[in-house]
Image (cartoon, rainbow, N blue to C red; front, side, top):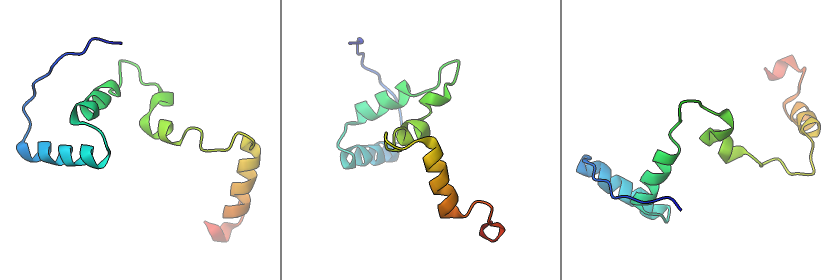
Length: 86
């Protein structure tokens, strides 16, 4: 486990209260929110695989469905080739 250190920052009081309320609504702590934010800052090279939006949607396609099957489903649902749907 990485060493933990105390950090003092100065932030507008209103933002602190809003952040505390957010943390409470999401059953976490302000320290954990800040730690996660800092951990997710991009390094010198940005990996698209690590992008927050990709992490959120990764794995939502069931394992027993191929990408081709999913594409067929989307084509049927949204009418691929149907100019009136565009």
